[in-house]
Image (cartoon, rainbow, N blue to C red; front, side):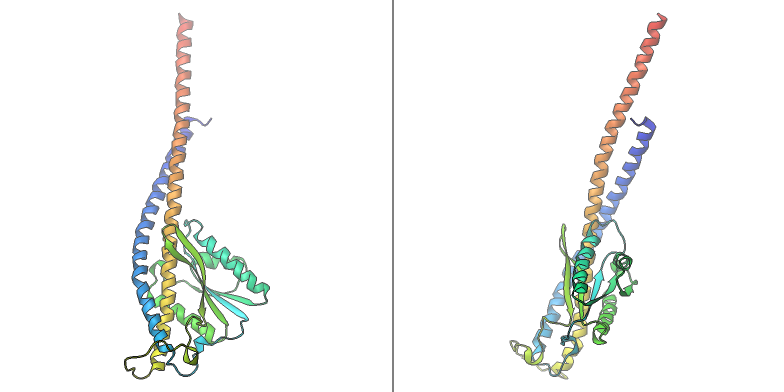
Length: 290
């Protein structure tokens, strides 16, 4: 059994760890509330701009490059992970699901390329020999704004239109609740959920005049729509990270509290044994003298 000095040191260390993890849990909860409110406020904007594009789709003339499908030989992934750890299985769940898809594509004879936002994803992919075309460092994900989404959107569109990839997908964690965040692999380019030109259903009639014309307005809205989709994925990923870190820190705090209780029981038992031994020594010495 450990001596009393060693047990006191262990009790103090575990108590300090519990204090730190409790503080980290509170910080993650506060950040989560802010990001969650921001994501909920941004979602109607994404839906509205999508509806606007759908209304204009049937009135667009000519070919739109971002909607053109071609034979897929190279698939690109934009991967959103965290910059820091201590967030449970948040990163590992997403990255292992991504690796399964990448292995299937490679087995089918296709090439896979990655664009990363978050240090954990970049480190994980490079250690396993995957080709990371670009790593977005600044700004950090927890400080990213619509300008960062615009920068990412321009890079992904350039990779698709230049023929560097034939298909682009988003890999991120979608926030569903405080305890549930699902790894998601969503198609990004080419856009297949909205039909344009002759392929679009004319279910929306434009009851207003457009200047200069529907095609020009449509082409102006498309970059904003893509940026909104990327920014929404950023907010979902960031909310999932904070929720996962809050859960992980709460679990660590609870484990530290249980460990501290067990150590105190061992300490009290050892202390009682020492007291009993001292009393027996005193009684024995008194009996010998008398």
